[in-house]
Structures are given as C-alpha cells and as structure tokens.
Amino acid sequence: MDAEKLWESWEKINRILRLKHHEVAKKYGLTLEQFHLLIELDELKLEMVSDEIIPPTIGEIAIDIGNAPHTLSEKIKRLEKKGLVKKVRDETDQRKNRVTFTEKGKNLINNIKKEVSKTFIEKTNTIDDENLKNLLKGLNELNEKLSNN
Image (cartoon, rainbow, N blue to C red; front, side, top):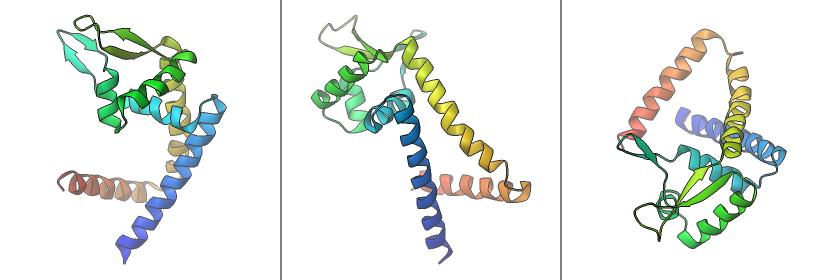
C-alpha cells in the first residue's frame, strides 16, 4: 500500500516538473520537443578519444533517444536554425555529421538547468533536515535497487 502511495506521489512530482519544463521551454521560444532534445543532447555521454571530445553523430544520437536518423536530422535542423547546435563533418568519415552545441546553445542549456533546478532546490530547502535526510536515503536505496534490476 505504501509503495502505491509512493508511486502516486512520484507521478505528481513528475507532472509538476514537466509543467515547469514546459514553462521554461516556452520562455526561451522552444517547443517542448526541442527542449527535450536539448536536454538529451546535453546528457548524452560523449566518447573521449586522445584527450579530445568527439561529438556524437546524428545516428548515435538517434539510437540513444530512440528516433529514426532522418527524423532526428530534421529536428537538429530546426535547432540549427535557432543557432543552438551545429553539424560538423566527421574528419575521418565525410559521410557522417557530428552535432555540437554552439556557444548560444551551451549558454541556453546552462540557463535552463539553473532555472529548473532552482525551484526544486528552493522547495527541498523548506523540508526539515531529518525528513530530507530520510528522503535522500530512501531515494538512494531505490535508485540502487532499480539499477540492479
């Protein structure tokens, strides 16, 4: 029974956070889809090769987020038009395009992350220390159990 109540609370929190994300996306002139793609691009793990960061290809991003490459390519073009990302030809394989953030895109993603996390942090700071410690302990335990399948 408590697990069901926890799930309901989790769903409510997720809904509130999605609404906050939607507000932030609109504020910056992004569709929700564009906003989520920027977040995905920011969270995508980049390969390290000889101390250089190699940006992902459109195909690699498509696999990571579960989109078809041609669909993702169109989405990337829209972000390019906004000046947030750019495509660069792969140096070793000219058939491939790699995607990187522009300076404007990096700044935007950092502003978005700060703005969205600010509300969360402000609200969690109003929870008393003992409850916050217990919540963190419980979330860490849940994260561990979910990670182990």
